[in-house]
Length: 178
Image 1 (tube, rainbow, N blue to C red):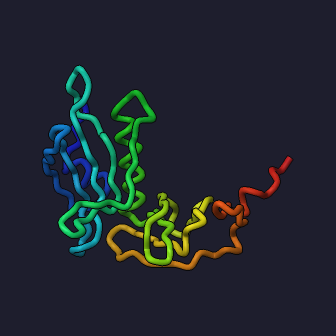
Image 2 (image 1 turned 180 degrees about the horizontal axis):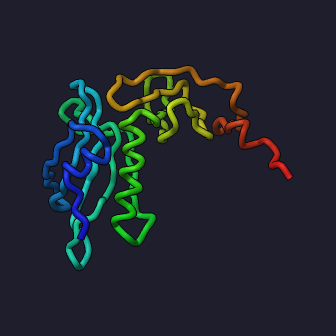
């Protein structure tokens, strides 16, 4: 049975600020491993483990990106489930690879938000990447790097075609070379 430890994760991520806590909710008890930023008030990255199945094996349930406490309520900017493989160890390795890219700031979380800051969509992208699709309601991007304050950014509309329901990246409309 695979058990992810704080020490193992510290070595894999090359990041010292990691803690493990237990969370009890109506669904049961979960173990939460949080990767903490150096500065107070910035979002954490939380790996949520739960006990499931007949064997009562602890498995990675999801990863919550840039979690924070807002008004006494826990919120996060996005989350992913890692269930691609039948082998739980491979799912954990996939998750840790993506988390490592965020912690090292190779990748960031890009949100599409409207004029008043309401969230419409988000995804993990390379540090300078832009989404392939932008909802029509989006006014600007909010780029979130781990351990840094979020930054708002104007959408470069020249990179997109307006399809009415949203913007589609021009690169997706280029003919496929023969």
